[in-house]
Length: 202
Image (cartoon, rainbow, N blue to C red; front, side, top):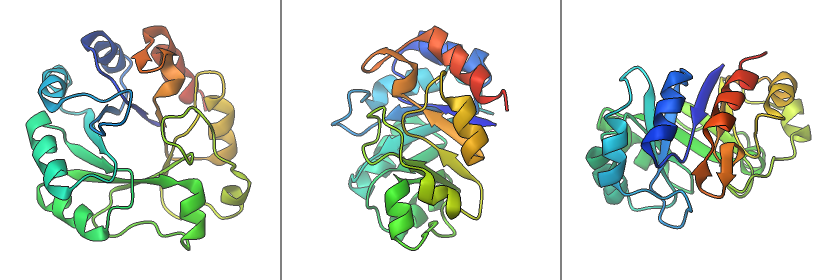
């Protein structure tokens, strides 16, 4: 099971995630998020992470020039666009040698005729309507019509529910942020460890 821990902002949380052998660590560059981090701070954390672990810059409806500038400054390997960005933005990011994640709500995915992105999208991430809000999405329709290629499940996951949801939904990967926090925006090392273990039980 591919596991991403998102919204990290301190060295100890990063070190715990690395010790747990996660596949990806995310840094949120969307200014409105309680998990926002400046690129100058993020790059110091990225430098602690072995290169085989993906480092993901998360953006939401931000100008392409800002996405490219911040991604370069933070030295991330992957860019996650979590808004209404056009396909051309993914192509531009890909042209810089970065991997890409198209993040959208499960509802939007189903409403838009299962648009799974384009050739410049490496991963599809399906989330709740409000990213980072700690709520799961209604999976009944998605079970009947799941993505045809590997996808990442997000939205309301935590150590207590991830095993059952993975068994039910059969995603390729999982992504967690608020579900491993002690308070909003503050990661809990014990919950990071518990989440990784629970996600990989299946």
